[in-house]
Image 1: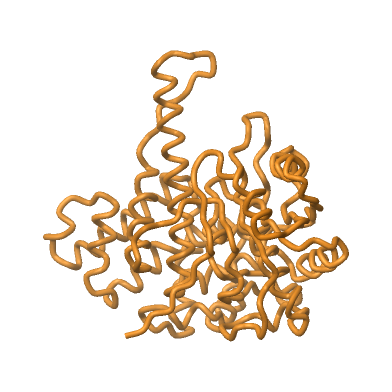
Image 2 (image 1 turned 90 degrees about the vertical axis):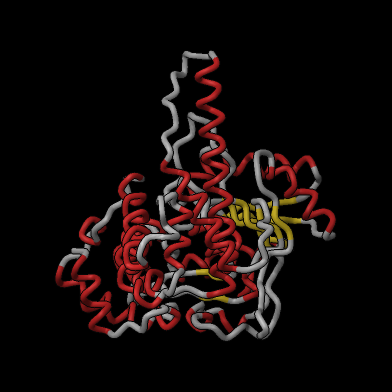
Length: 383
C-alpha cells in the first residue's frame, strides 16, 4: 500500500526557535519578508521581536496586520494585494490559526491567480502551480505585560504545520478548509516529530495534551526561591508539551484527513465566529462517542495515552467510554465551553449549521458515515 506524506521542509521547536527565521530566509536567497499577523501582536511588540531579527540580518520586511478571527475572504484578498505591492519574496505567518490560515491562502493565490476568489480553493484538488515560500511562526512567548492576541490561541495552533487554510465565506458565513500540499510552510517554529506514521503522531499528541491537566504550582511573583523556580520550569515544560502536541497534530491531520468534528466546527466559526479550537473542543467528546463503535481498538490507545488505568485489559466498550470521558474531562478542566449555546447558537440556527456541516469537505472522512439527521441530532444535543 502506498501512503502520501506531507510535511513542511524544516521545523524548529523550543525556546529561542525564532532566532532561526532570518538564517532560513537568507540561506534560501530571499530578501524581503511579508509578515501576516493580527492587530494585537502587531501593536504589543510581539511582531517587533521578529522584525528586529530581520533588521539585524539585513532582510527587508513589511507587516500586514489586518487579520480577523475566522478570516473573511475579503481579508485574504486585502492581504494578497498588500503582498503583491510589497515586493516581498517570502511570507511569515505570525500568530494563531487566523494569521496562519490567511498567510497560507495568500501564499498559494499569489502564484495561482485563477484562485483569487478564494472560494475555488475549497476542496481537495490541488492548485496548478507552486505556492510562494512561506514560514509559520506561532507567537513567541509573550512577556507578562503584553495582552493576549485576540486571534491566537494560548497554545500555538496545529495550523502552523498543516497543509490547510480555512477562510470564511462572507456571503453565507460558511467556513470551509482549503487543504493543499502546497499550503504547507517551508519552515515552522516547532520541533519535528520522529514517529513515521500519522496515527502514532496523533497518539503522541494525545498523550502530551493529556499531560496538560496535571496541576502547575501557583507562582508568587515576589518569591524567587526554589519552589517558584520549580513552578516556572513546570509551566515551561507544560507549554512546550502543548506546542509540540499542536505541531504533531498538524502533521497528523495533513496526512490522514479529518472528520465530523471539524466538519461541524467549521460552521460554528463561520456563522458564529467561534474560535476554531473552542468549536473543536465542544464537539470532540460527543463526536468520539458517536464514532465509538466504528473505531476498533483505537480508543484503548487514546485512553492509555490519557492515563486511564487498565485501558488495555478492560472490556472494549468500557475502554471506549473511558477515552471519551477523558477527553470530555480535559475540556472541562481547561475551562472550554461544552455547549454550542455558549458560543451563541440557538434552536433556530441548527438547520443552517447542519446544512453546512453535511456539505463540509471534512465530513466524508468520518469513520462512521453521518447522515444529515445524525448531524442535526448532535448539534441539538449540545444546545
